[in-house]
Length: 441
Ligand code: MLT
Image 1: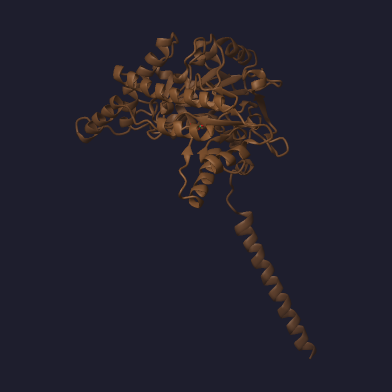
Image 2: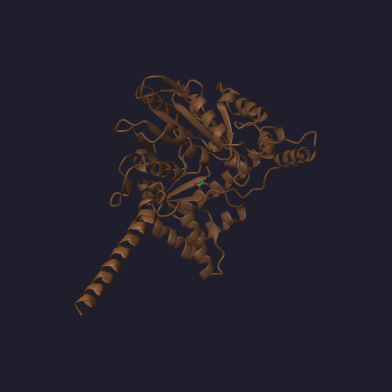
C-alpha cells in the first residue's frame, strides 16, 4: 500500500516537473526569445486622422445608402491631370516601349532634366539660388517629412505649431522623441506645442524652451493662414542663434495670392544654413495619385557630431536616398517636368484658380451663414470656428448626419485645433456649391 502511494506521489511529481519544464521551454522560446517591435508605435493615438475619418464615412454610407455624402475632408484634388502633363507621360511611355530609348533604374536623386527645371522655375525665378544637386526628387512630401528623421535621429527636442499636419507629430512619436501621451492635456510630454489661434492672429511665438527641430507648414495646413517675411525671419534668426533646424513644408505655396508672403523659406536671408524645404506636385499639379515631390537640402546646412566634427546634411540625405530609394519613375518625372512648360504652367494655374474660386464660395457662404472663418485666401483650406458649446468631433458628426458633409475636426490637427473645423476647396464646383447650399439651410 505504502509503495503504491509512493509511486503515485512520484508520478505526480514527475508530471508537475515535466509540465514545469514545458512551460519553461515555451517561455524561453515564445516569450523571452520573441522578436521585438518598435514599442514607440504603441504611443500613437488611435489611427491616422484621415483613416479614422474615412472609416466613419464608410460606416455612415453603409447605414444610409440612399444619402449622397459630399467629401470636404482630406485635401485630395479632383481636377484631372492637365493635358500638357498627360501628353508628356504618353511620350515617356512610348520611349519606354522602344529599345533605344528605354530606361531602367534612374538616378536616386532624380533626373537632371527635372532637377534643373525645379532650380530654375521654383527658385531662380524667385531670386533664390538653389543648385540642382541640392534638390532630391521623391515620391511624396509626406514620405520625405517622415524619412528626414532617418538622418536626424531621435535625440532632438521637437517643436510643432499647433494645429498642424499630423505627420510631423506622428513620425516623432514613432521614433520616440515625442515621449508619453498625456491624456488629460491631449499632448505628448516631450514636444513643444506652439499654438496658432485666432487669439494670436495665427502667428506662432518663439518657443519657451530651447528646441532643436521646428516644423512649419506654410501656407498652413490646416488653418490656411500664412506668415509674413518679417515673422518668418524671426524664426530663421532663432534657428541660427540656437543651432536649431527648421523643417519647412511649403506644399501649398502655389496657392499664395498676397504679396510679401514667402513662397520659400530661402527667400529669408541666411535660411540656407538652417532649413530644409519640402515641396510637392500633389496640390500644385494634381499629382496626389501620381506621386512626385522634392526636398531641398542646401549644401551650407551642417551640424556637428558629438565629437565636434562638421557633418553636411546634403551628403547624409544623398547617402540615405541612394541606399533606401530607387527614384521616382521616369514617366512621372517627365510628367513633373511638363509642369514647367509654358502650357503646363498655364493649365496648372487654371486648376489652382478653380480651387481658389471654390475657396471663395466656401468662405463667403459660411460667413453668410454666420460662421467665422480663417484661411482660404492663400490656401485651399478654410478653417472655421465651430458654434460655441460643441467640440470639433461633435460638429463633424452633426455635419455628417444632418447635412451629409465630411470635413476634418480641428482637434485632429492638435489640441489648439479644438473648437475649429477644416473644409477643403479641392472638391468639384458642383459639390462645393451643393454643400454650401445644404449648410446655408
Ligand atoms: C490633408 O488633407 O491634410 C492632406 O491632403 C493630407 C496629405 O497631404 O497627406
